[in-house]
Amino acid sequence: KQEVTQIPAALSVPEGENLVLNCSFTDSAIYNLQWFRQDPGKGLTSLLLIQSSQREQTSGRLNASLDKSSGRSTLYIAASQPGDSATYLCAVPDSSYKLIFGSGTRLLVRP
Amino acid sequence: NAGVTQTPKFRILKIGQSMTLQCTQDMNHNYMYWYRQDPGMGLKLIYYSVGAGITDKGEVPNGYNVSRSTTEDFPLRLELAAPSQTSVYFCASSYSAGEQYFGPGTRLTVT
Image 1: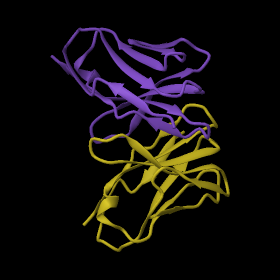
Image 2: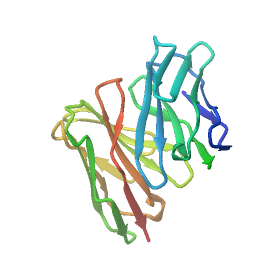
Image 3: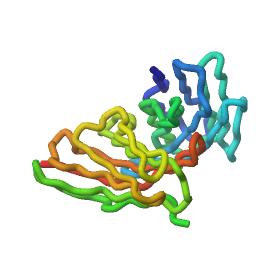
Image 4: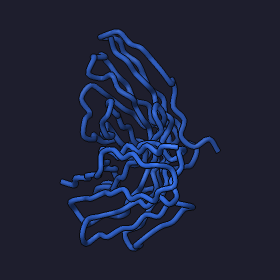
């Protein structure tokens, strides 16, 4: 059974720092991996989708990498800003395309 | 293009009452999903559908029912509301194993 773990559970950094969020999964036979952002009391916003054949995907200051063999993905946020404060979730689909979510990393970027 | 829409945004139910959470997508996605998110927790799949007329249980289906009569709509029914169903409910859609798009959520309280 696929399990997804995110470390750390919470992170507080000063504005301007580069930071890395980690996601690990137990079954490497995945179709893709998706990173989401969730603001308090809001829905999920898709940030990046990495296909299983890709090693990384970039969108603005965000870069996500995928290492299927080791069961890991990282989300790199460059030059963090207070507006980046949110919970970041990673998820992988199972064999029926249902997403299995990690419990998230709560990020606070201090001005 | 509205994406995934959900109604209502908020609802308070008394124990034993019933209600239907509405979900509509306008992206012609074949897959649709219902998740619940309890405070401080990740998302858990309640039910999903791979196309009109086809539904299947997810991880936590007890106390819920769904139907999928059209590609666009995927309502979630709570028959006898219980306090354990207090949660935030998210509907999502995707094209098979592709990127999942989420609605803004319905915040439900059962007292």
